[in-house]
Length: 74
Image (cartoon, rainbow, N blue to C red; front, side):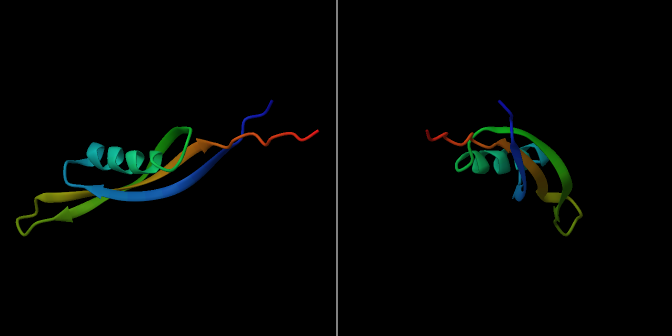
């Protein structure tokens, strides 16, 4: 039996920090994608206020998940 995965790129943002932004993206992805196995942070960015303090953190992730085996007909 072989294992096939697929990787997609997703982006999202949150105000609580980089970890919060990652959790937000993964939670939203898990609502529609089964068998998420791993992620890689591709890019981190954000927005700042007039004093230069970060207000929103943005992350881009490569999210990898398993592909279901096809049903054999016979």
